[in-house]
Amino acid sequence: MDSPLLALNDTEWENLCDGCARCCVVKLEDEDTGEVYYTDVACRYLNLETGRCTDYANRSTINPECVTLSKNNLEIMQIMPSTCAYRLMHEGRTIALDVNTLRVCGQVISEEHVLETELEDHIIDWNTTED
Image 1: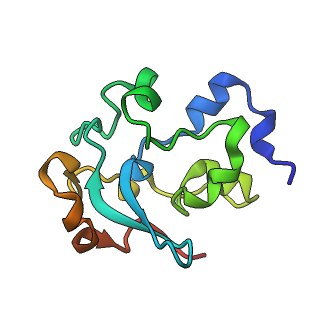
Image 2: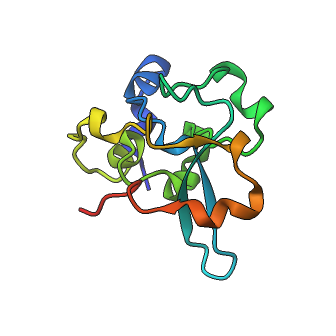
């Protein structure tokens, strides 16, 4: 698939992100089906008030599980929230969502306060939207 994302320069790429931080929630994958489930648990490096990473430049280094989308790994697009501007553009859909309703601020807790064995209890369904 020839993605329209490939035509973006670095500034346009970074500006496409609306800062909703939905990609920063902990995700669980069903090993049998490959289905991805979102939780209301956020990465420990997410500032829960601003919805921004506290160390954005080094996010992949400090958190190897960080979803770091780039032009070189568009194949991971399916794990991005269905509301993600990158995913919407990649799929040729309209980007007309209200970011204020998408932000995870006030809806998530830090993974520092949740045991890994408790993650299944935090699965949510508000992180996706159907067309």
